[in-house]
Length: 290
Image 1: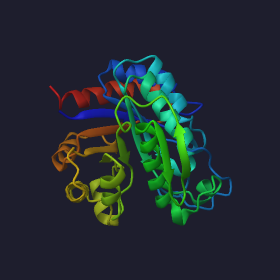
Image 2 (image 1 turned 30 degrees about the vertical axis):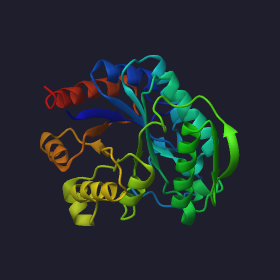
Image 3 (image 1 turned 90 degrees about the horizontal axis):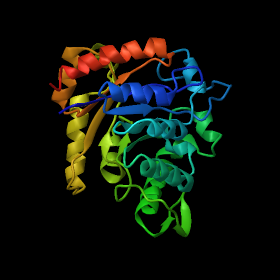
């Protein structure tokens, strides 16, 4: 059975995240994903990978863990996900506490979509050099897993280093909630197998991807599974993809590639705009799980 979710930039001018979550749950959606940027440097020196002009929502995002906590309070079943959380911009001890608290309060409904980020100046403001972003991400995730698993957790790395600490609560699942990596480089598959639980690329139109030499989703699924097997993992990887269009043929194709969760994108708009879109997307999703 394919899971369907929705993703929206939660902003100070859009439908509130708790309202969105309640409306999505009422329509049968499995998950709600919220992206984040702590800020956008006014210099705008780093070009946006998505085009020439950076959309307004990037500098207006709510903190995803605060927003998802509000969503948890008014829902019972919908999974609460980051898509994506920028690990390079978060202290791992504090983030471990935030994730575990949300997971406990929601009774194990957290999915942690993560990435390293693209904005050089943004992560530099958090003390992280662009060249080290993936090393930092790796160590912070591994350190959080130790905090989520051990009574007296400690970690000693190049970028994260702490002696034994006590940190509670622990997440509902041993070792923490599922972590999905939002990246698609040739190094992604090994990273997923080492310290994540699945792959979560952004959707590209098939024609655009072919023209730009973009993401080969079927190949990415295969490479992830190969890396998984080499790592000796006994569980199964999760394959989610976000920004999926409500196109039946494309959805069938993505399911055929091996994706078990498809996440539709929503505009950061008011309830009068977003709720009717939820109705239409729910109708599309229901056709695949009857």
